[in-house]
Image (cartoon, rainbow, N blue to C red; front, side, top):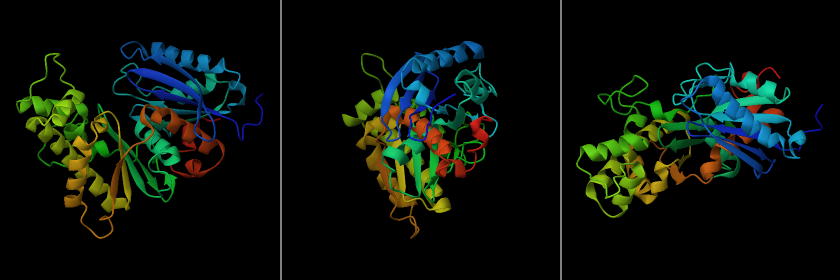
Length: 331
């Protein structure tokens, strides 16, 4: 039996293709205890689950564990929060994997809330980051892919399966290249780190002596004034601006928060993004839309998972949004 959890911490998991991070997080968004393991992404599904269990065991070793009555999971997607399953593109051993049920079992029947990583980042930014105090917001993760999530009417809006706000697969180029999702001209196909770097290489950009061809290397060249690198960021910013403006026209957001590795380029990305947004967000009700960098950094996934668990546990705004109850794993 557990003690009274109302004001206690929650356990949070952030699951990606590189690492599985865990934390105990208090009601103010402070990380009290951490654990982490590499993701054995090319191994079997059960091997990946063992790494999750190791992280949970490390959290359970903390004296704070008994007070943590709920678990939140932010996972690379696609996720299906209504069924409690995950199918991360970069973890092939997990396809329709019953993660909520497995974690519920491992943690002694605790309530488990599952969200995609874009929604987790949104929850984190709305809780303790740049979207705090905003009732209508879009939060984006621009990294290896492009994900996102929505705050509508002051509540996180994950949608029935936990994937609402997935701006990376908004089409912004009708005749564009084929995306990994099967569509053409998606924001992700233009603005993600690998595609931004690919475009720079195709247009004649050359890496330095270390041979680094990542988006971070392109950003360094852009900061040094390389015109091809700058043009690659301009094109990525244009795609992001088109997707943000389309979202604003649909649901009337007033702020877009941009995080992820590509956003680490700073003004090399944000200056053209703001310019392009001025060209696309022209209607009277979206003209005042602002774009700002995310504040929660590498802890976004953990904090967002904790926010989801806290709100579901306390019967707050999260549980009232679509997908909340079905994601709780029958607890």
